[in-house]
Image 1 (cartoon, rainbow, N blue to C red):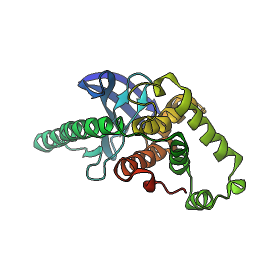
Image 2: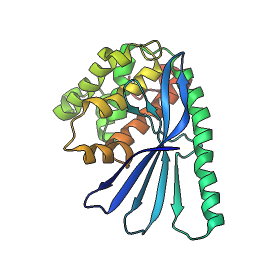
Image 3: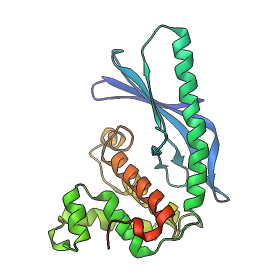
Image 4: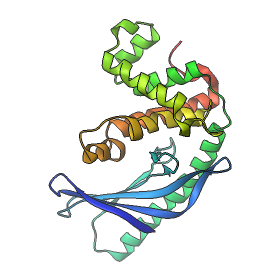
Length: 235
């Protein structure tokens, strides 16, 4: 591992480190995704260390830290002085990175070959970004006048990114499910405004809105790749 960045959150109550792992997840011929571990713990030693597998697409720095249905991307490591337990936990962390790397490479390459129409990209973005079941129901029923301007603007921004950003016009992303997924992650990574870098980190990597919506997008894309447009909640 190559430790790249470290920092503190708040007034130092939590600290984090990012560690780059060797090799890449390769989508198509040359769309590369670097493999990272994102580790956090409390500064006073209470609680557990959290290690999350966090792939990052190089061309646009999109964080693709999704959990698969049968495999979590996170390991919680208890503070312990027992060397044997620590070694077992380290093996568990490396185990998830190996398993997830292989699975995600297969999934992303499959998505890069599955075509999706522009109007379905818009529907997928709407579904992934919907903040509540009520908003989803309004979308399903075509009650667009009841959608907040904040939500509409967010969807429009993500869709514009999906259709026009150079990283969305590559062989792996243009008109593909992989591109639709990157539209959501790219919106939160490269378009959305945050109060500061700490707020951005919390949103993308510490269970915030960006991470939650990206996971919704991942699940929707998986369903679309299997079932086509029928997987979308919208008509």
